[in-house]
Amino acid sequence: MTVELWQVDAFADRPFGGNPAAVCPLDGPRDPSWYQAVAAEMNLSETAFLEPMDDGFGLRWFTPTVEVDLCGHATLASAHVLWESGRLDPGRTAHFHTRSGVLTAERDGELIVLDFPATRPVAAEEPAGLREALGVTPTEVRRSRFDLLVVLDDAARLRALAPDFVALGGLPARGVIVTAPSDTGGVDFLSRFFAPGSGVPEDPVTGSAHCALAPYWGERLGRTRLVGYQASRRGGTVRVELRGDRVRLAGRAVTVLRAELLV
Image (cartoon, rainbow, N blue to C red; front, side, top):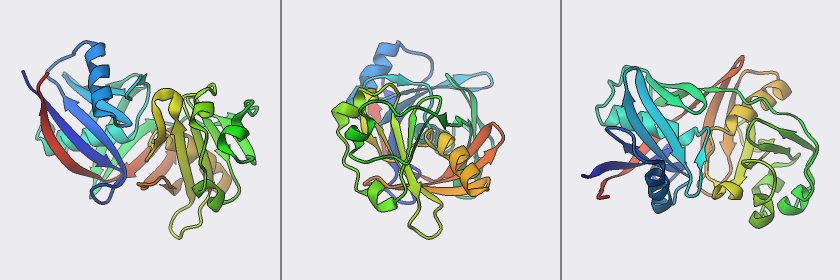
């Protein structure tokens, strides 16, 4: 039996930008070891697995080494695949049952809009070794449900970061979000995301990180609608809107590959 496989660039306006995710639509569940083996074979930040349910789709996300509790770009890619493949009418909202509850995706013109839980970061003590691993001195350190949030005062310092991934991987968090005020017109804040302990040294564009960035920058700038740019090598724009304990994340998606798995 073959399995359909898509590769989609999420939070991207063009092919080979944003964050690539593999998406496998399935007829039913498989053993988690198979999911992990496929994700390792794809060797992307995340591979998503979709299973049809009576009231939506089951959705699980795997890095090359672990299953994760929340992933934005692979959810956006999954919604794109459902509509592009005809599994879901383009006018209908996608409902995903995940380890982080029910998540939704809907179309707004060319944008796909995700509804995710906010993971508001709180003040935290700076972990030992953090500044040495990053090579910079933070102005502020916070912690969200999943990640450390490191604030810098200068965009150039953020863009120039060359972390020690081995040292970062030993910190007690899924990953490290680094953020700074924007130096680009039309963008409110910049970020980068490192998660070597989860098998992703640097993630190109991280939707779930913006669930923490939106409340942080919303409070700091006094606004609920913001535009973030993740300043990785590939780069990508995430439009965010804070709605109480939820965050809406909006971006585009581009299909770059359709194939079949033979195992």
